[in-house]
Amino acid sequence: MSSSNPYQDDRGNKDRSITNPAGQGTAMPRSKSGAVTSAPGGPFLIGEAMTGGYGKGPDILHDCTIAVDRGEIAVIVGPNGAGKSTAMKAVFGMLDVRSGRVLLDGEDITQLTPQDRVIKGMGFVPQTSNIFTSMTVEENLEMGAFIRKDDFRDTMAQVYDLFPILKEKRYQAAGELSGGQRQQVAVGRALMTKPKVLMLDEPTAGVSPIVMDELFDRIIEVARTGIPILMVEQNARQALEIADKGYVLVQGRNAFTDTGKALMADPEVRRSFLGG
Image (cartoon, helix red, strand yellow):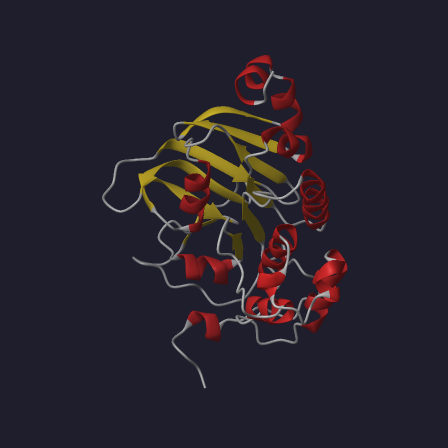
């Protein structure tokens, strides 16, 4: 029996891989105002010339553009209060974009709710409150698959291959895990949706340097499957080292945009944002 809930009506496909860059689902998502329109060409995901803020508050983003293409890791860095997480949330539909637009795989999704964006294939991992602490690791992963009707056991096995510690602790309450392990649960749950793009808001916040390196290694592995990864990261130097593309934001505006390697080599970027 069909439900009006898009999370129940459209639950993915039978692709056996964790990620599905070719597309997820077949139902056209409902928008807040009118149908989704096509905008062919350009990056796989782009928040283009975004200006906006929260509710009736002042603009936090000012003509800000961030984008990522298939197989790329794009990172957003900058000082505290630069609007990094705000830009990520704008792309995910969590604040009002008063001008500009968001395109996913050629479709204008600016008016879609975050829930509908998940149905379209966006996987989002917030910085905090990103796991169900009272549930086991495996129950958390199962929650990530709740939009799917197909057998998701192959996907779960691949998540366990990516994060072996989660398989070891799969029957343990997620709230009992270390900070780094919790982040693995959060990323794994997002991968259970078989997203077309993965968005990570400060995935290494509060973890040790060793755990940070391990998380970055796993992020690189996911990107190698072809899925685009858009990431906000406070550890700018380490993030730019693995980035195909980098965006330095200052006061909600694009200050520098280039490859990760070029930004690392830019004297002004190094002096102002990377500690020399």
